[in-house]
Image (cartoon, rainbow, N blue to C red; front, side):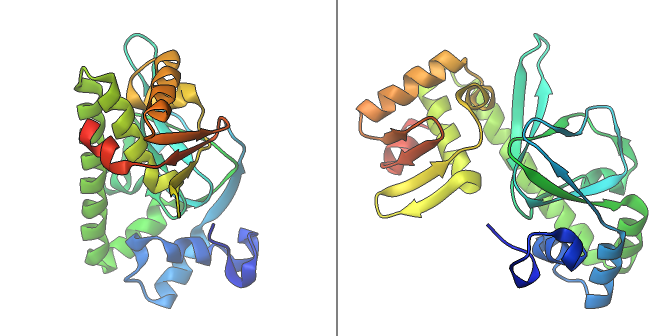
Length: 239
């Protein structure tokens, strides 16, 4: 887990400079420009389950994840939650909406204790005009998000439940994975129901398939919040 300057996690002590400096979006900024954005940033702390912003709200801020994780979700026509993606430390969201004033068409919810720095549209735009490289980075991130959504659509579109679960586990590596001698350990802050929501299957089906994968020696379940991926190649073959 990244920490603020001098090991402090109190964003007020570093005036948000650590969070701002950690995202690739602002890597080309000078110290003065970084300080300008940091001076405009306001940090809020959220508990698991708190709504950070809701669908339909005006998108007039850039949201930077300083610490923790949040899920981006929508509800399907039949009222079921669908997780689109998960954002972790140094991820950001809202930059695309700032380029053209808009409203969010999804909701962001903290899935663990999370600190978010918010930068206003006016501050962001003043930097954007002087730094065209940032626009390119926004487009790069947009492309990455499109790839994630395409992966999600592919997962949801397959009739194979094994493929859905395998694809989900591979997808969760980035946000929850920790390399160990035995494999990749997923230290999860989402439950089985949320995993099912992400994969497009019922919680009971998710639980049953995870147990099957364990019997096959592909994964090892450690309590309810940790999964050890022991054979990633097998997951990739199923996906």
